[in-house]
Image 1 (spheres, rainbow, N blue to C red):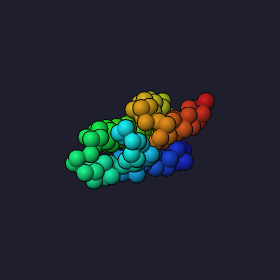
Image 2 (image 1 turned 180 degrees about the vertical axis):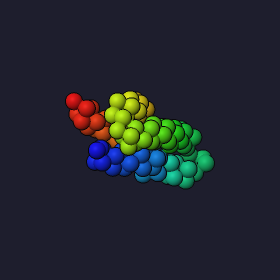
Image 3 (image 1 turned 90 degrees about the vertical axis):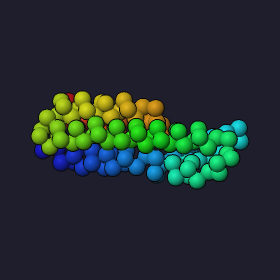
Length: 120
């Protein structure tokens, strides 16, 4: 019944879990050095003044992505059971969790809107 949405939720879950791995452009330090992923942050020299800041940022991205994916799984289960209202609630929470990084991720907002349109 919601096969297309189920597929999109599965892709969003996968994307969320990999936010820190795939990354996006972020600059740190007074020289605005680009550190676009957790892997690159961890590879910075220990003497880099902004290393800890970059690692903390990307670990927060990783934790947020994991939390959003967990909520996404709840939405996925709800869609598989045909419980659209439950899915909407779970996707709203995904969107809320994504908010601090939404300009870079844009994973859950479009999906949430698509589910709302399906409910209308």
